[in-house]
Amino acid sequence: MSEVLTAPLVVEFPFTRSLGPVQSAFLTGLRERTVLGVRARDGRVVVPPVEYDPVTADELHELVEVAPTGTVTTWAWTPSARRGQPLDTPFAWVLVRLDGADTALLHALDAPGPEAVHSGMRVRIRWAAERTGAITDIACFEPADDAAEQPHGRPHDGEFADPVTGITAPARLDYTYAPGRTQSRYIQGLAEHKTVGERCPACRKVYVPPRGACPTCGVATGEQVEVGPRGTVTTFCIVNIKARNLDIDVPYVYAHIALDGADLALHARIGGIPYDQVRMGLRVEPVWTEGARHPDHYRPTGEPDADYDSYKELI
Image 1 (cartoon, rainbow, N blue to C red):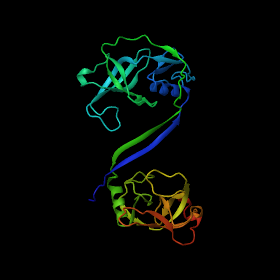
Image 2 (image 1 turned 90 degrees about the horizontal axis):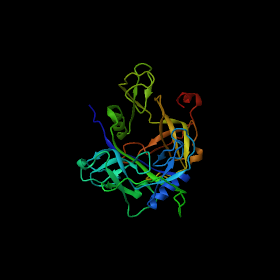
Image 3 (image 1 turned 90 degrees about the vertical axis):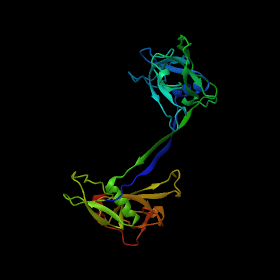
Image 4 (image 1 turned 60 degrees about the vertical axis):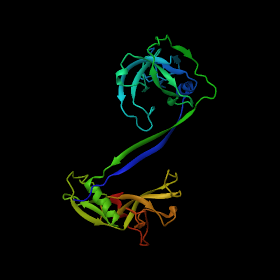
């Protein structure tokens, strides 16, 4: 039985958005140690504020200032903090209904242990020492058993000096990817400069990369078939935006390539030819770099272009 591979994988990108008047006022308010909600059509004060009524979908504008103190409605204990979380010690995730609000805000509560946390406990905001106009301007909540409920809900015009008009939030997912036995065999074949697919016993199509089952017939595929190494460009796109940590100059071409003997096109970068000369039907072959487990890119073979009818079913 071949080795099943695993590898750490990170999916990461910065999410950038502009802010409308409601979200701009909310985040700028946090920078100024002011918490704002918005009044919905039914009179409820929603915190964090939303731009559209959750019931009627009407656009909302009426901002309301609420208190920095509130009541825990529900909670969950986190025994060990993870990267990027608000605190680096054990803490509780809490939903807090701030005084003057009718909905709850999710954030961290700094508490000595789970026995110190309960629904109904009074808490207050601990502000970050440096504030930039982000939800992290609330460093966390902290217990405030001595804090009486404050009558809040004053109208606010949302006007601040130097308002925050946009945010960039990093999105990141860390996980361990296990491709399974079928794709492990495929990856191990690539390390030997071979491209191996699997044939469906029913429709006889060869799938590359193999999936362990035929996507059309739904039956298991076990017969291994070596394909390529040459193939035909079926479709392609020109990439004009440089990706982080990818040392490739733009523009470059990414293409679907139908390897000879395969019934499913795989995707790969095209090199060795100006980007504006890549075309459907172009015949290509893999280029391997020393020590790599997969081809670095595909380049033209110099053969005549493939006839459209030979690959039209793979577009």
